Image 1 (cartoon, helix red, strand yellow):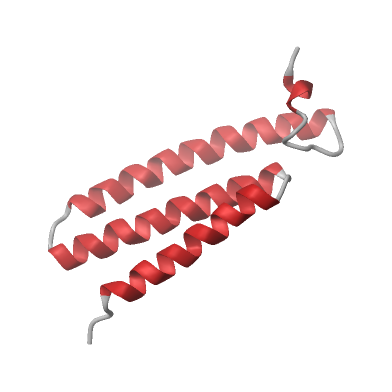
Image 2 (tube, rainbow, N blue to C red):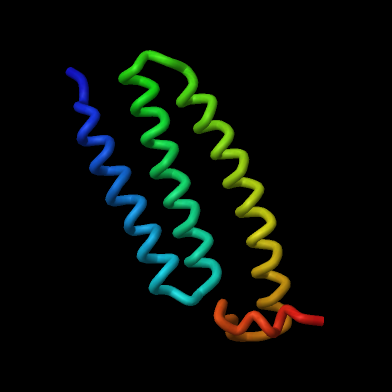
Length: 101
């Protein structure tokens, strides 16, 4: 019993648009980072699903590359957010002027 590729595409689309909504509608930097990670995971799901359908390993390789980029993005982004949170109680991503020296 196999799952059709359309189900994977539908799930990845829902995950991706939840991530887009999180980035566009929320101003909290931590939620924005989590939403970007959700979009990365939707892309990974499609890479692996199409790799399975086409019986090629290239999708798995791209998924691993995306995971490494996402880990680096999360580490650097979280470090920046923690640094800014130490200086101010409330952080709004629209107020970028607070990052200037």
